[in-house]
Image 1: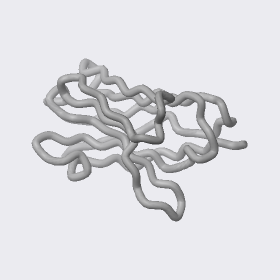
Image 2: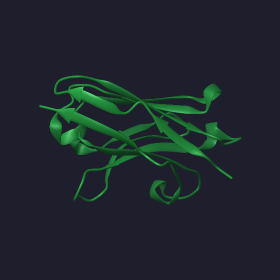
Image 3: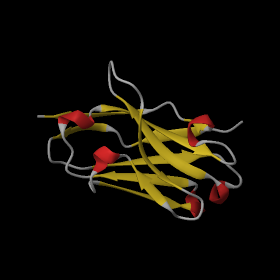
Image 4: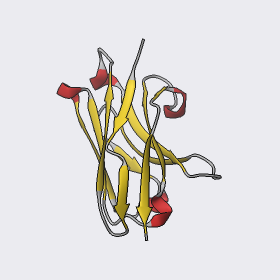
Length: 118
């Protein structure tokens, strides 16, 4: 059974930074595309970022250079570094792992809450 677990969420002031981590119990982690989605209260889930198995990265339009995504295959972990946070970034952030399927159809974590105060 695959287990995906996010950590690093919390409360931060506007303009601050957070780094989210996601660990996945995948034997072949290096071959998986990894990504982050978020869902704010009362809003649709939206794509945040992804890093493919080959290192290619993609971001949601709203990121505007504020976030970076990286992976450490030796630790089965992906990171989302978030800078210049604003209250609109408040949401539950979910990590997902996918291989041979669209990212949204992969293995999801339980999510970690990020709250940005003004």
